Length: 454
Ligand code: BGC
Image 1 (spheres, rainbow, N blue to C red):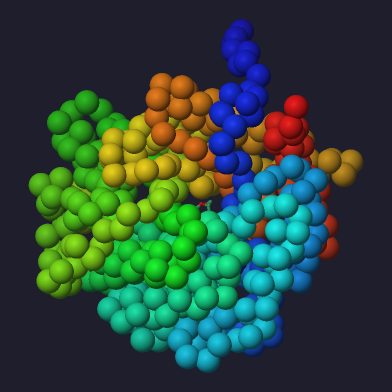
Image 2: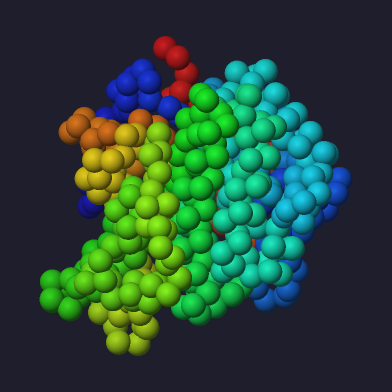
């Protein structure tokens, strides 16, 4: 008979009075209203139009209809005692062509949302880029074009001007390693570009844009709390053979170092850790290394799983392949990702090893499980356990002295999960995508109780 360890109960107070609690979302995944009031198409609007790219050919034309019914979700957040809301701005909603003509109705929408949050005592946390570049800019190469730096800084200037008097907390980019890897190397996310040259150019321009965008926020919003977010994952070798250990180091360098280190002013990691970095050289102009650094107020880390890797001669550039969770017979989420809470502990410590980082917030963590509505309720015990076990690991790191000062659940509601469409559900709140009805899940009820002031 298997014995189940009874874990001690968690209390908000254990994390300290100043610890930040919130939920995270992204414009394309929730807003819908894809062409309302003059919004221009984004690369994701265009990418999802073509059959065969998204599971079930799902699209996000309506998604959670957050654009039209945000007050419903704000009321739910209030009901769930959630004090901080992370959302992103859709670039093509306020600049339909990416540059030039401004859509006043787009600006009005975000003004209304921000005001409504503040009126309800919920602090807005704005992400400037959560993967949805205006399609018009992609026609000019998107992030592969070095002009993307000035397109982006113009957009950031506009956001700072219109929202900076009320929004204090800003995140410049969301997970550059994911959107450049999936969207510019593998072609499985928008805009569907492939190949090493596209990828390396995009990586470099995104890195430069992150620092440049942050610089604009600093110069224009005196009180701004400025961060940017990175995806991160504990990487372990499949065996203790030297070649698997070396493969794990290359993957760790690519996923956990190559994006944060330039931002910290350290430049790209050395090619001895990841030889393909040498191929970046043609795109680096004099002065770029200095320009990539920025003194962020906080760094957001987003950790969902662990990866186990082995050496592989068939995988170009990194020479490593992932050993899938199902092959390792470990518990997984609906995404097929291993449930491995110690990963977040390791990643908090990894980011703590950089003395330049002032503050670390977990800006996303959460899980997809196959939720069922039974008698109007969703009893998602697995998600509750996932969140609790990750919080225990975070607390362990914090009690050992690591800097970590916040935790945002991904996500408030079920939403459009990129290439997975609506098949995978990450919400604390269930969404019936036919009727737009919401049901607070058991995990949401637990989180509300946890957040309640005693
Ligand atoms: C992204 C989210 C995504 C979540 C779950 C993160 O990579 O920022 O947009 O929905 O993980 O896959």
